[in-house]
Length: 230
Image (tube, rainbow, N blue to C red; front, side, top):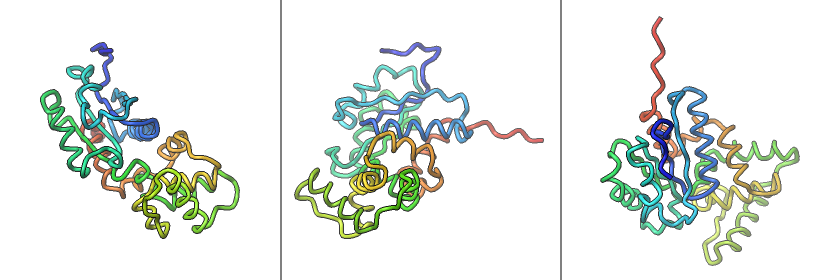
């Protein structure tokens, strides 16, 4: 449905899944509430329910907003996207949208390898938060690594297994986060991802360059008004 012009969102964020939706919706809300972005920013996060056209046909989902929204942010997991590299995927999206969206108002970001890499970029803090939420003793590194490998064997048989927590942070962040969540609060859920996005330090998340690209772009697109001089 084409939005009405009067109340049309200025920013459209296209994501592939519920977890990414909840994570970046929480991050944008924080940016607006804390005046890192303009307080009146109108935005909408939309999800590709087919999860297969963000790279191939982003215009199919975004077309209804061309001419109404000003800025477009497209985010997806590089792992499983079909692109040979994150850069190739990002360039593909830019080429698909260049006729309809000015280059300065578009950001296409492949999260390498996947969303959970942003969370495990601050893994010690994330783990501490999960342990505190569980209100019980935290699992050992060995227990978390064993659970991570168990999840990998079940979900991706044949994949090489990490040999340390640090290795899992780099190569299998989703499975590491799932394992830590299961061994602390009992399960992985998109709601946990949303809570972490709403709670942990954004400045810490910025230790991951991909995340910093997104937040820097959002602030440039919707800057807060300069503080009035006294």
